[in-house]
Length: 531
Image (cartoon, rainbow, N blue to C red; front, top):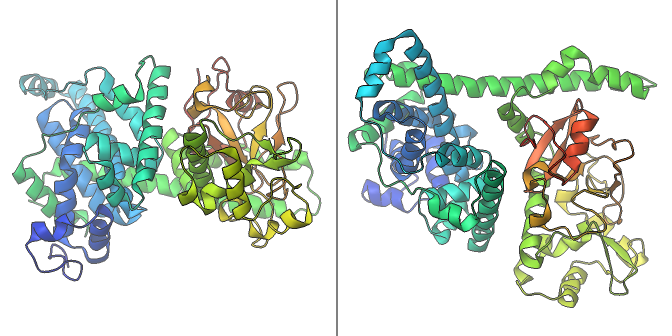
């Protein structure tokens, strides 16, 4: 049944009052589980200005923007169950609105070539006024490439004008977390735009973000909500409710998403086949394994064909969420101490080494006890409260008891359940983020944080508390990473984003990715190029 009130999810007050108090996640869950039309209409009403603005900044024609706007919500209706976590629907809608508008623009350009009347119609139609001018495509593009949590807070706070308290409620996280995410997101955006020739501070960028006050007409909002709920049951359910052009556009975007999912599934199947082939060898030489990985048929399946496909593979790879949380913890640490932790630190005696994985423990176990002006001695007490004594060696009788208490984010889902080995390691060496001779500060990474490797997935099988990582030298062979993910490995870049890197990556590109020097250029699919 479609289009009915939100029975069972809401009380019996008026519709607007009933939906107004629910978060995005609650509304979306009601629609996914019950196909409640009022819940979907509330989402359309709530995010219409933001979606309308995203469409208008790509499609300067009112009618074209209206088509993309409606198609965006049709896609949400069909793909609602795939939005996870549900609370991130605002950021998801921004990405789909942009993807839909770009698809529509491509169709319009092709039509103009075939039919000059289309060009005349576009010229005669009043363009949509907009103040972003040349900045808008760059900002929108970089915003769409932010990690989900960062994009979500920018969309909610900077595009939709919500307060941090309101955004925190929508996302289901503390207000302080929203503040940290927002500050980091603005910094990343400013850094990426500076790389592209637009020098803006995070504060200036926030001021430039357009908080859309205009939206589609009320009649369009109503017809969009009605059509979307019907469309969720199948494209054949909406004849006469919405134009064939809008339905066709929504179908194309939904199909693109499905194809991307199939490609990922195909890559997974090839991975399983490759794993079985290699595991079946009683003796496997390095050359044999390399030959299997570099086979042209297999490479065609496992190497991402586009940035979008690379991002999709990344988000579905085991270990992604763990490494993502490690990245967030690194940045929370940076917000407090003004730098990332060194790969290896020393205890109070200046001689006893311990790992960055230990240093981050208070942020994982007792973050509520961390104050912005916390001193070193006080912070060491917090580490002790987590069970580790930084004044003793990692393998002392006291500290060895911590091995069994490995935090979940340091353990890989594909490792043995009882393993106490770390799955993620810093890459340490001259010129890297963790250069032993330098303090690791975000602003000092001149090769752009988004394009600089920080932590890598590796089956090195070292105890997680052991102060050891992966050594790297420009003059030596690039270390072999991975071991958990077939045909590639996950990495964390210095901006907090997680990426999948294919085993087929060239040593030259990987070496440049390890460097924080802007003169070291590379092209790796799914990672912002440095050129």
